[in-house]
Amino acid sequence: MTFTRIHNPTAAMAFTAWYVPVDQTRDEIVQELWHRLTYNPDETFMLAAYEGDFVHGIVVAYRRMEDVFIWQARSEDMTREFVDLGLNGVIEWARSLGVKKIAATPNRADKIWFRRWGFKAGQDSSEVVKEI
Image 1 (cartoon, rainbow, N blue to C red):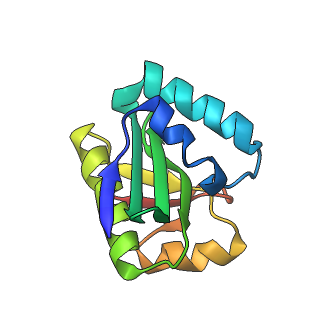
Image 2 (image 1 turned 90 degrees about the horizontal axis):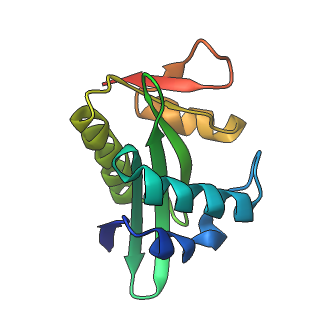
């Protein structure tokens, strides 16, 4: 499996089918991600895992005021390798920004997954957070 940090806004568009629409459509996610990678590349993190043409997963995070927010996280097979490298990549990147906390808004089923990696309920009941 190959892990690649995506910096190019156009390359990020190739993963459109992987974005999880919750409060936004996939097209809106693509537009916002393109904008973030174009105008705020140092405050945007995207990691893709693939073998040949098969995508195993993506992680997209961005810096907010006082934390890093995991905006998109999806994996076809949720291998431990992908989850560990994806989360560790976000943590390393967040630390390089001087950020001490990571947040996410997982769906109900994913909250269990996030707890396994040390996330706890945040002040906002819909978010989980991890101190780093």
